[in-house]
Length: 235
Image 1 (cartoon, rainbow, N blue to C red):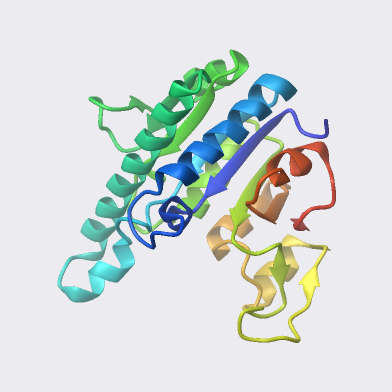
Image 2 (cartoon, rainbow, N blue to C red):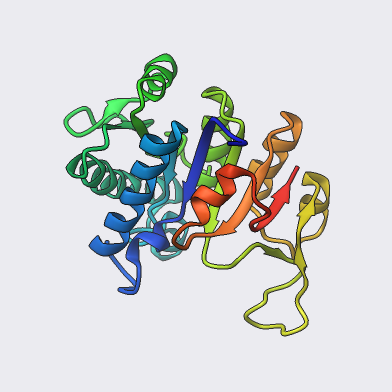
């Protein structure tokens, strides 16, 4: 096992599955089963940062009369809905889990407390982190890197719908080349390379935190944690 403590970053769009909007219960159930297997069978300590784009994207609504800060808070609330779905599904499968939020919603989630989150992980609980950073103008990508550093995770695993990072959009360009690995600096300098937003990549670079971008399909999560050459390694 290459990694013992990891942070998995999930976009909100993935929660929609084939529906295009809202929450696809099958996707959440399948993901929860993989997380359970990873925790129970491999002993890997897991934190998960969830996005909210399947329900609300703050930057989009901000273009139509809502202030950007308000839109971002609405997006943070959307991540909490996704986090609630994932946490309950994990628990229903017999995998202990805790939902923590950087945005205070005490009726449904614990506040994010670093040492409490680390203790949960040490006890074999999956920690689901919602609410982004708790502040507007920051993405959940930045929240993922920030949380990974706070929780002493060895790597950020960014799950996507493509099998890694390309030099241009592979959906638009047949000649697109996939990177097996690249540096944080290369990812920042080339605007065609889409790893995470620049603030997240810069924070990871400053703290020498690797990011592995991989396709979220059955079995890949375990392979990445085992150290197999899946996706693109940004370090």
